[in-house]
Length: 258
Ligand SMILES: C[S@@+](CC[C@H](N)C(=O)[O-])C[C@H]1O[C@@H](n2cnc3c(N)ncnc32)[C@H](O)[C@@H]1O
Image: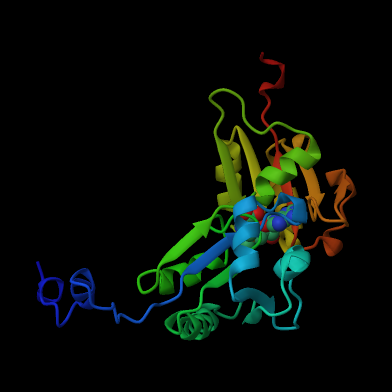
């Protein structure tokens, strides 16, 4: 046992047990809120309750000010909540790390001040979510709770009307940012797959799918569950127009097995 756990002068909680006030400064709680893929009705009851109760809401923004996460929850927010946009470069050539350092420092200020902070995270926070980088920086210092969200990978399968996995199928989720070689290797052994982060990587993905004979099985969706959701045959997709918020689903082939 270390000294601070037994010395009441050092650990005020022990004084509190003796009837004195706990003078430990109360820090706020950090929430990583999964807010789903876009449709505000796909926010969990828990995320909704926390959204409405915390004094501080933070969310990543592009440097041009564009922000998706806030738009998803706009109708849930109160006018008196403090909002903290966290600019991120979203660039393949610039590191996000200094931006996350700054963001963590900013949030730590509110948390140290005793204010709870909810960080919005599109989809599921722990699946390629930006919140993970704040979690890694802050969860050792502040009480932290992650509220899972409905991932775009799951929501897209529903929107496309294709079951993802049967029986002993293995689902692979992979980013299109991988090299063509790695994508080829992973997809060659996948029972079913979801390829995210398409954007400017679409042509590379398409070529690999054609090469592996998976192109006719692949399904494409943009902005799943958002008002401007778009489902189009993958052969008709214009690579120059593929948005970041798009993905490809390669469903299981076991459909006929009952
Ligand atoms: C950084 S990852 C975040 C994933 C997110 N945490 C989740 O669980 O859905 C961003 C990628 O997720 C996919 N994505 C997220 N939301 C989407 C949506 N509503 N429709 C289609 N793809 C989406 C896109 O491929 C996008 O490039």
